[in-house]
Image 1 (cartoon, rainbow, N blue to C red):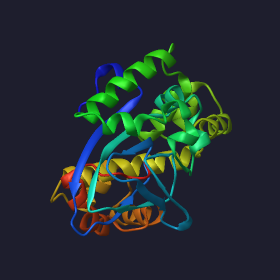
Image 2: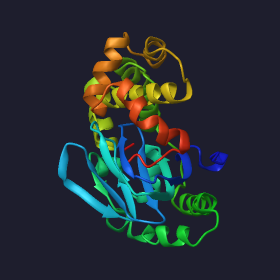
Image 3: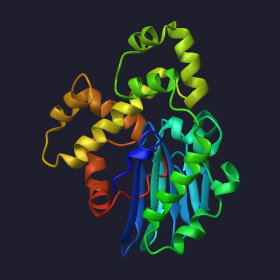
Image 4: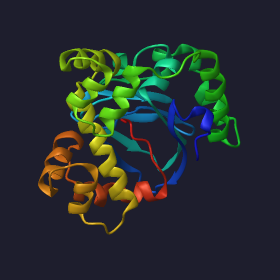
Amino acid sequence: MQVPSSLRLAVRSVTAYDLDLPAGGTHRGVPGPDVVLEIALDAPLDVRWADRPDTRQRAWSVLSGLHTRPAQVEMPARARGVSVRLTPWGARKLLGMPCAELAGRLVSLDEAAPGLSDLPERLAASRRPADELVLLLQHALREAASDGPGPVDAALAALCRGRPVAVSAAAGGWSRRHLQDLVHRECGLSPRDLRRVGRLARSRVAMVRGAGRSLADVAAGAGYADHAHLTREWKDLAGCTPTTFLREELPYVQAAEVPDGGG
């Protein structure tokens, strides 16, 4: 659904999904520049980092901070829920902590924000869970956000869009080292890795929305040097090639923006 203008500084997207998958399946969540909140309505989420079986958990709500590894979500035959992508500023205001505290983690709302732990139950009782969640977010953020994003938030956004680290540092009047410290303290990634996950997210959107578009064109549009560079980064960050992602994930994405587990 379209995010209301009152939430756009804090919320990148709110998506309700209702999937009927007779055989279930496994979904791959790829890194991105947002904090992702997944709320399940029919059955608990079954999620872990793909390379860390010991991180597997089942919960009605899962927050994932910024990360540089893929997540793995076991999909039931019926999957219904709501997915929210929060900007780093939005996550800080909603959760009362910098998203660096969630970096590389999968955390339930019970643990990260006890005051929001009743969200799954409230949304499950609603006929329009995405609309209900938007109203709750508007109320919570109105209470929490007395100020807008600052210079560090602007630098994070610029890095996600692909602005060079040196240029971002100069725009803020900082040294590269100071910018690195600020970014890591705020989101838990280095400026370089923040640019990488931002570029990966741009290429993902381009591949999903531009059916039939060549990967060379996707690479150029997202800011990669070439097709080979795109493929290397997808293997490193998402654990698969772009071609594999499209083959395995496009059916899910075409049905709905299914849970990413990671952002």
